[in-house]
Length: 465
Image (cartoon, rainbow, N blue to C red; front, side, top):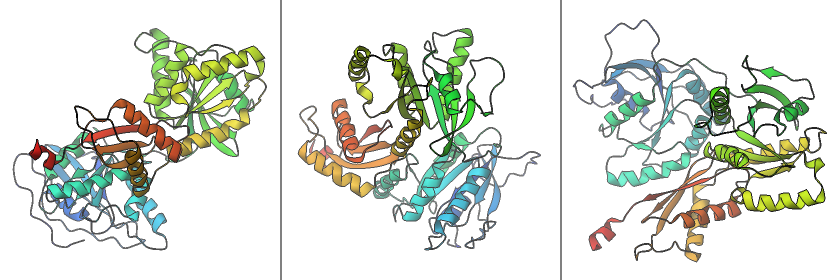
């Protein structure tokens, strides 16, 4: 880290600086993290509006962090400057995990600083993998963006999977004020309590009433149900159960059956729907239980849509499979082809909660769906594939002009999200074509994926127009 720090941004009613007001309670904490020499300390000084002594981190000494009190727009908060994540052949992953996990546990907002002039390094990728598991807001900062040309370099940072990179020049102050506004928006009203991280993978068991969700939970728990964090009261509350399946522990949440849309439900049913929505949001993968002996209904479709819109991995489980005769088997296959055509990617398993048939297969399907949910395609491999695909099947022309795909990056996982940088609008049909081809090439079994487009008209084209 350079020992020469910039002068303050400037003194006005919004400027940062040490707050002289007495604070009796704890303040929210912003952790500024990143590898060495990306400009963390320079950015911290921008946050503070003054030069401050920055302690250099010694590899392996986790306590070399220093916090400063800052003020912006009348809001006080603490800024925690962390030591650089030094990429070394031995112990790098452990060191990165310790630093990132410490930031996750103690900070209310995490600012990851990346040197956009260098691009994404292995250390940046390793740090991002840890931070993506955080339940704290993470702001990705592309530092050393001094002009419009640097903005193009910053686009590569989408591949870290932390959302859109925010471009700044900490040295010259470019974008610093807007970044501070973004930090304030992300800060909670009060410091968050530290929460436990890790533990069993979280599974939401959802479906309409009377499809056998509680029977399946009891079967999984082998009738010895271990309940964790159950909410006392009525049966409409989600109940957490730790079950052993496939040699692993899983946290299953048995939810109330969804009969109607939240907007049309009332009373107890309304609150049951809200709690079920919250259970899906809190889960990593959802098992949608369908009754194989009944037709696939609009309610079933609505539950599936709810899981997809929440961006969760998905397993479709057909219960009561052992009760079907040949006619119903054939009819159900036709219903699946017709009514579930939009989710051919979903992992499917046939079970009987009553007899236990096929229940042990759930573990494999859950693991497959979660693996797809967390799949990341290297940027170089992704663009090589897309270039060949577009050359063979270019996007259709719109308004007499065919758009050109310049670059594609995977912006996120859990679920996988792709951003296509194009010179023009891509028709929904072509975006679906891209999604289908991505699945054919890279898998993504058991997970929804999202393909969005950012249109960037070339300046040369604008001049010709």
